[in-house]
Length: 292
Ligand code: PXG
Image 1 (cartoon, protein in one colour):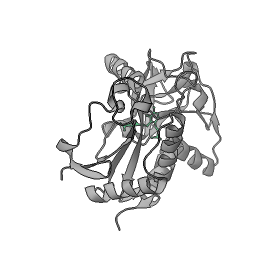
Image 2: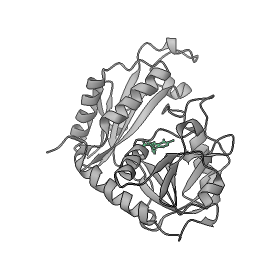
Image 3: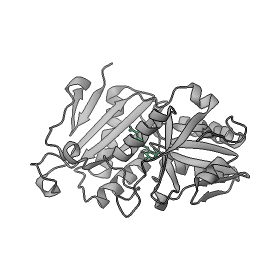
Image 4: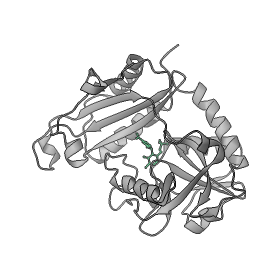
């Protein structure tokens, strides 16, 4: 079935789903987004994603033209319309259509777009064997530029980081901040395990407050593992017992080599496997039910 894209309350077939070239989302990258997953007919962590979206909107003074409940209902309706039991919701709110010139006051109304489609970020074999990654030159913005908590439509740093990873010949790049500390992948958070303690960079170092990251922290806590939000260097990563990435699109994926250094035994770690098993369980039972 051709996907039906929601734009400002109406549905359009994929090839007809278009927005104006005068939309400031395109002209200036002025807008925000969320990527949300549907597992077996349930939308996973929908409210958490919407809360983050409204927080991003607040910071960039973007008036989302729907209430929380209206937007929540629109997401549910978009999934129902697309009859997708397993897939991905790409929710975007742009500044909307306005004259040229970056002043947002030129845009009277924000544009709301909801795409519901399939997504696969990495090939299946990487989930079993693990990924090789490399740190890349392009840095992640810190809070003095654009706060990394804002999930904005400005992904050029991340796109460049992905190009740099491609050029090295690895499937994912690890971005540092301007001080050389570890932040995250191009579209996923990073965890390092050392002596059974989980460590992940804090948001003030340049990490997104990932919803999968939070889910993993909750699972780790229930399993009795300590998890620290801690500044990490490349040295810390190289000397991890285990390492893995987390994200809505990526889910949980093991990392087995970083900048040519083998991590642990060079295979998915014991703690990672436990966390992944529980994560898979949760994603199939939690969430907002769309289909019976
Ligand atoms: N960091 C960044 C920079 C991200 O964009 C994550 C971490 C993981 O956060 P969540 O909340 O998803 O656990 C993200 C996630 C897309 C797409 O094309 C979006 C993301 C990742 C990959 C693809 O919609 N964002």
